[in-house]
Image (tube, rainbow, N blue to C red):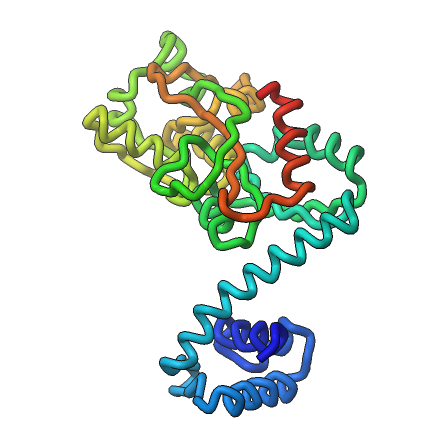
Length: 293
């Protein structure tokens, strides 16, 4: 058994198809079929059985698959370490950035690229909870998300910046005469809010529960600008970080401080027990220097 055969087998299980796995691995379908037959011959056991269009793992197949995932992850870490040792400023940094933060990281990314031009940044835009899971699965090296991170002690964190939350409303009555809004009042109005895979959504749900508020959710979205458009058209009000609100049109929208100690705290997360590449460490330092963390 070698790494390449193990990689082919795991990809077949993921794709549930020999053909799609072959396309993903840039080989022919007969090549994968032959290598998996050889693997079964070597182990003296069937690994996969077909049931209709599905590929099911046998008991042996499940053991090979589960250990294979671990072996391939350790092999990727080994390769990352060797690349760092031999090529210092070269490599790939896989970084998760929530849509709300994209507008705030342009300058740190520019500074990082100027200092480390050989490092390719692969950026995935997703909510904080989805990015957290991607870090845990080894799909991302680092991700930015709202802190604190709950229920995952294996994640290391580095806080970068913190801003108050505001309630975004149309620039009209009854809001024009208001100075701030209490959390308990949010239950009186329709809300437009981020999807469940955003950490900010989870924090707001905790706030509502603590204040005994039942939110009237009108629209969910992963895009802050879409939420702002929904507020502008009168669908509901939104709770957004102050820096996001400051980018919106003051002629049609206004934002009032949310009377709560809850803050939009953004930080970097990574899997603590994993090898953290020099390129990832450099990105953390770049962010700390930019935001003065």
